[in-house]
Image (cartoon, rainbow, N blue to C red; front, side):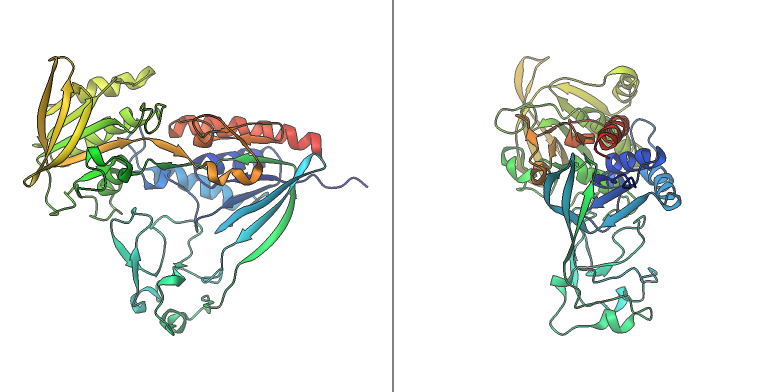
Length: 413
C-alpha cells in the first residue's frame, strides 16, 4: 500500500507564506503553514495602503483568509515556530513548538475580558507607539479572530480576564508544547524586519521622537494606528508643517546595509501623498541619492514630483539634530554643488529591509553576503527571505516557490 504524500511545510504567515500555502493547496498538496505570531498577515497588514493602487491591504488579505477557510488542505498553526529540522528520506522531519495557548480556540472575540484587564503593554502591531491591554484582539483584522494574552504583564494573582470569560477560553496555566511532523519539502517565507532606527544616531534615530521610520509612518497614517490615522509629531501630537523624507537611511552603505531595499523610494512617494492629502499646506521634501521607480511606477514619481508643496532634492543627508522645536538637517545638495542646512518638523527615515536569517538557521540554510537565504533542492525561498521586493513581487515569487516545493515533494513522496 502506497503511503500518503507528505505535506509541504510553509514557514511564515505573511503575504508570501500565505500565497505559497494557498497556491500549493489549490494545486492539490496538503500544507502546514507555521506562523510565530498569533495571526497571519505579517507586515503587509501594517501598511496603510498598498502601492501603487493606494488601497487598504485588508481587502486583499481578507480574500486570502476566505480561501484558507474554504481549503481543508491547509493546516494553519499560529503562535508556533520550527525549532528543529533534519533531513529524512528525501524530505524533512521538523519539530514545531507551540507557544502557551493562554487564550484557546473557544474564544469568540466577544471582548468581555479586555475592560477588566488592569495591565497595559506596548502595542506590537503599532510598533510600540501606543499602549493596549495585556489581553486583546491583536488588531481589528486579525485572523484567526482570537484574543491574545501577554502573560508576563499580568499582576501576581490576577485572574480577572478568566473570571470575565463566559466561554472558558482562558487558560492561565497553559504551557508550551511540541509536535513532530514529516514533510516533503519546505518553503521559507520568514519575511523581514526594518533596519533599527537606533543604529542611525547621526540621523536622529533613537535620539529624537520626531525622527521616525517609514514603517512607523504607515502606522501614523492608518485608521487603526496609534493616532487614529492622523499624521502627528510624536513629541507634541501636533500636525507637522514641514516633513522631510530621508532616502537610503542605512541602505547602500557599507557601514549598515550594503544593498538597496527596492521599495523605499516608492514607499516615500506613497507617504508624501499621505501627507499632502491630509495636510495640504505642509511642505514635503524628499532627499535622495537616486530616484528608483522602475517600469510603470515612473508615473507615480512624476505625479508626486508635480504636486504643489513637494520637492525632490538630490543629496545625501549626513546629519539630523534638534534645533529648538524643529529638526535641523545637514546635507549635500548635489545640483547646487554645496553643503546646505534645512529644517523640518518631522523626519521620516526610509530604513531598509533586513531578512530574518535567524528564523531560517534551523534549516541549515546557506545565507548570502547580505543575509538572504539561498535555495537548495527541497527547500524553496519566497518573498523578502529571498531578496528585497514589494508586495506584488513577493506574491509572484511565492507562487514560483510553491511550484518548486510541489515538484520537490513529489520526488520525495
